[in-house]
Image (cartoon, rainbow, N blue to C red; front, top):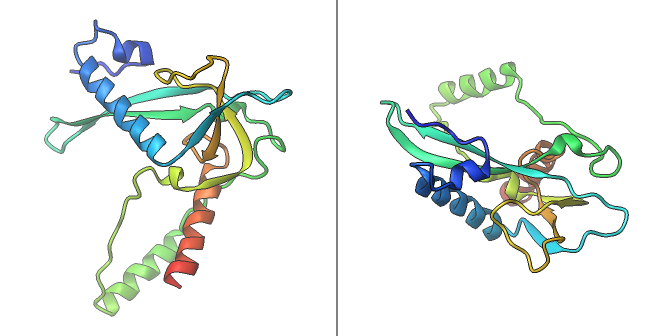
Length: 178
């Protein structure tokens, strides 16, 4: 049985027998975030407030119960966002069950193959219109510790993450595939 850490400090502590797995998961998440150009480090503009963030850890099991991987995700504390300042609208569209049934029926009737895909780091593919600042995540050092991250891409936990992702995927489907 593996105890899932509840904080960054617990995950990377030498007292944690799985700390090397958690450190590896944190590094993988940082690589994903920096590879997607998620933020830039800057000074916080006067009158603005940076939103906090935290690390969330999870052990992903295989079907047989053994460990598939250790996962670390950086999430922003979107509950502290202010309407009209940090975001304008929030929604996350969901397919209606009737629509899904129609797609399945058409595929069966026309002998089509349906495929599912998982977009890794989906929210990280979506640019932001709003100017949002986030405190430096634990494990990231800046030249000046008072600096913050100005988000360039959406991040898990943002109020508008679902909305921004929906706009991104819709634009891709209509311009690239349409």
